[in-house]
Image 1 (cartoon, rainbow, N blue to C red):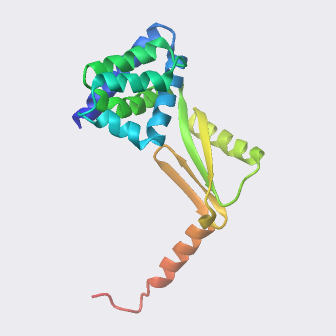
Image 2: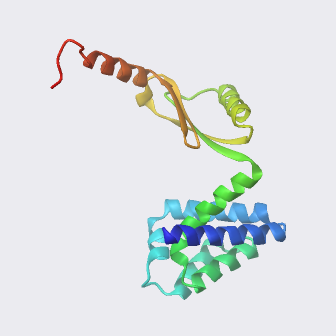
Image 3: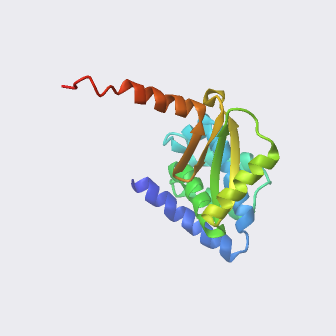
Length: 185
């Protein structure tokens, strides 16, 4: 729990600093890049959490990861976090920063899962409906899940709306499994 609070505080500090220096967009891109690298590389996550790996080595890895592509503010801030021996909170800091950025910009993330690939026009319509319902702009990601059979599942933040054949069949099965004529002891 304490790590989450520390990560949130570091993210808030970076957010304020980036806003003051008018580098919010660049820092957000760098944080998304770092978050993607951590998600895709278990070794990077283990390195950040390892107390055995020396801070100088971690700074070298971060410098190689960004390698001149990042804003100097981002790389300096990450180096500072590592020098303060708080590198274990970097994954949480990245996540908190992304959440704060989206809240400040009025962006909501949504995930659309379908049984087959939908035409782009239909996906755009779904995105417009979500934007209308939430009053925010939408970052919509799509994925294909053949086990749905037909239909879709859309998740917007903590809300989930499911209209699929698989779900309907599951509800029918549950309905038939409840027999009111058999006593339950």
